Amino acid sequence: MKLDNVIAVRKNKKIYRDGNKCIKVFDENYSKSDVLNEALNHARVEETGLNIPKIHEVTTIDGKWAIVLEYIEGKTLAQLMEENPEKKTEYLELLVDLQLNVHSKRSVLLNKLKDKMNRKISEANLDATTRYDLHTRLEGMPKHTKLCHGDFNPSNIIIKEDGSAYILDWSHATQGNASADAARTYLLFWLDGDVEGAREYLNIFCKKSDTAMQYVQKWMSIVAASQSVKGNEKERELLLSWVDVVEFE
Image 1 (cartoon, rainbow, N blue to C red):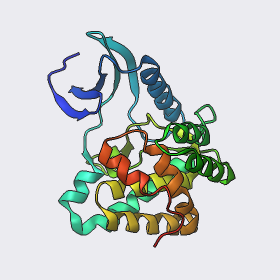
Image 2 (image 1 turned 30 degrees about the vertical axis):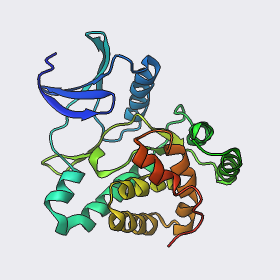
Image 3 (image 1 turned 60 degrees about the vertical axis):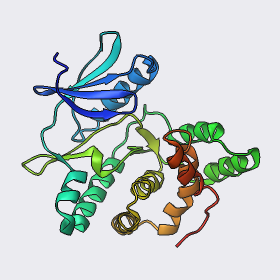
């Protein structure tokens, strides 16, 4: 495999293209169990029949773990939104349609979203009283088993020339409540500075899924707290500012 064509750089990893293969190479100190868990998540989601890149192999390259995937030629939905701002609503509708298709699937061997969130809240930089309140709120939310992406945003959607859409990056996949997944997408728009896009996305999601907006909003503080343990300091501060939010406009 040739590693001379870098197509993306992410925290703790670089992504290369070699012909029809996409090679995700992790840093030397990246956890072996996290790499293998990401590959296992991806393989389990493949079995649902969703349009996602196929895994070719998990290997090591110069002492670094790597996942080799099918390369999908096309543009991300984020690129299309930037190039065609007048079509943003149309693209947001497509984003929600794809997400609802994800939520229609089941993968019973994936980790449970609630378990992951409880663990993350315990690790969050919050006082014991706030953590207790968040754990209690989470425990009171309905238990579902829908496939959740965990990082569903326009950058993780590739649109091919023929119009078909492929969903990337299943490292955070779990089974759980679809509204928690929607709350995460809302916060991703918000963290990216696109507050209007976040609001429009949420309106479309609630309309298409026939979900009360207040129900998704109840997940916001829980999701924000669970996500605050990772990311940069600015993101942590923004996410933690949501933790005390129960209702908002």
